[in-house]
Picture (cartoon, helix red, strand yellow):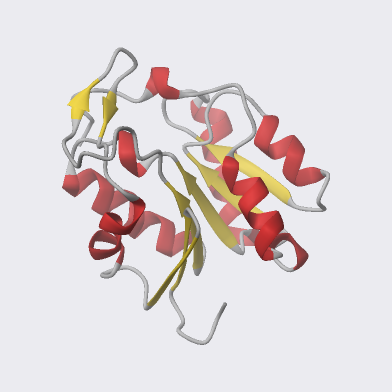
Length: 168
């Protein structure tokens, strides 16, 4: 199953906001190995996390090679404590594709750190010059996350999702 409108052009050469949000919440004090799903073609977030003592790998089917993606997934199954899904759900047009991504994420690690770009916050998805934008507020994704995670907490603009209710 492929996206009708790819998110290949939505990648940005900047540090993900999830790094700063993780700083505020103290997440990097105990999450030391993460897989960045849809992390784009640049390594700025990986580099920023490294300065915090966090090892991360990027999986991105549009912006990384098959070999890079294979290596990242193989590493993640052995090491990842959490997955980062930053500004990814909001660029996927298909509910079944978002479901599949979340289902895969739960197989990799018990914790997901999720952010979305809310666009114009209208709740009306539309095609943009770079791809697709859902334009949904972050809280509207909770119903899609609920089948995959037992506990979902919203802190500012980050959703911290866990498979086990006594974690985080």
